Length: 545
Image (cartoon, rainbow, N blue to C red; front, side, top):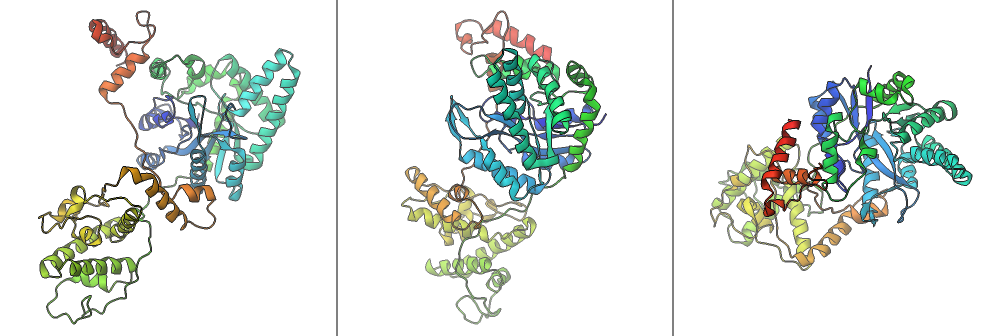
């Protein structure tokens, strides 16, 4: 029985709260082990796994890995509302572009509510971006946290208690939601059920099946909502969630949230809609067929900045216009005669710099020739113009100075480049200080060399705003104002990971037993309980090896 799973999570879902213990390679490996045709990565409001997915897809051509996003879909942005889950999966590269636009919009509008950063997507924004170029996204109604399933459970409870007003309100909300999703996605909208046997899930599954088949004629699919790999990993996942402090209702929310094989699937759906398993698996393979394998990887792109357009030189003259008698600098020649304005700008600015520092002489010209040669070699390998990189950096360093900030003399191997000194990026003459260029860049180092600079911390806000304004002014005219104001300059995100010691401490905090009902206090070793802690840790680790 072939099946595609449209709803899976990885460790990238842990951005705003502890949520998942799956690693992407392990998730794919487990999916192949249990015979899946593929799965979609739908982390909570993040596309952070996208590049890893593209790389892993190349390593697993027989297993489709789709890129999606579990967004929080709301009507408004305000405190106290419910943040309903909703699944979006890119069918192709255009679909992924729409996911990026939606995610950026959500994060740019983030706010704090009830102690957590909230990143909802408005239905109006979803409609705006999808309807601009429809047909590139697949959507599902998501889990019990989705608007559809949540309203079904609330409607049935209201009817049971005789609360007819709430029951009718939830019924109308269900109708409006499905009509909205159908308008945006048509046959690419699927109603998602979960393979769980909790009371609410059984109720939701039965009602979802009736709505899908009898009322709205939508196709059902099974979403595993995998937050851990196997059933036996449940207690490790529970300990991980509890390690943050305070108890969470992990049993109710995550008891069935793992990647299920066929036996588990049949067992957990039997109390509700087990007779529809084959049909739902076939529907998931319809989704599978709609999703293309595409590649987001591309050559590195260097932002363009305005430069002086130096004229092309004649082959037998130097940059001063004089006839060259004894001259053996073929790469300098190439750049002076190049059709590319950035090539000509780089070499003319560097040669002018040599003149200004009084070193327009063979020793410095040989160094500049070698740097030009290496840049051409690396540029051909990377498929990009390596002369453009320091030009762009020079442009923004000049802007940083204009913002009233000092710029450091230079850091690391970037000081070994004469062209950096001549362009004003660094302030150390590498020939005077005997700094070899190969430390920064050489024929074998096929990458853009990083250049670190120091600025005044107090000027950071001013600098970022200035660059945002400058870059935003160069965006295409169809870019919305919010993106234009914010996306011209972004801060680099780094991911924190737990090493061995931190992982052991996390396990201690999340561990629960009769002896340690509130977890193991990390300070317990200071009060004579080292032996007991290590005994229980050893026992626990041994059982899970």
